Image (tube, rainbow, N blue to C red; front, side, top):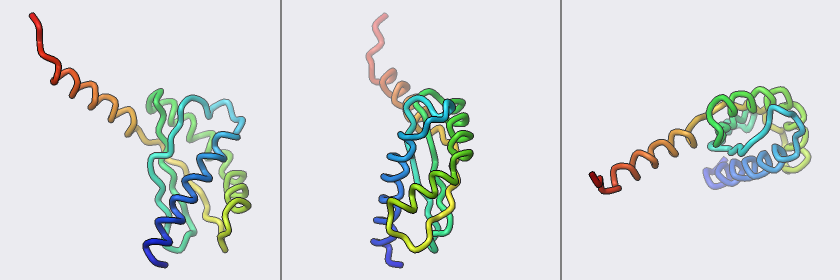
Length: 117
């Protein structure tokens, strides 16, 4: 599969997973969740979705538990929305990159501000 097609398929999966996550009713899946990265196997058999939350890694971990519990439903929905020969199995992984980015931004802003004594 060409790299253009692989990139396009990865973006399609990311877009559809985002839409499907918004419809889930699990109480563990709350707050501002974001799909940071999608790792799609070359043969499209496995998809790893890295999930981050603005509320921290604990909220992302709880959301991932709920998402992995609903992985079968998510896979079925993904298969009905995308025209793929085989729908990949989905594994959700908690990621704290948004939280780390916010901390780095805060540190950089503190450095840039002039110190007034």
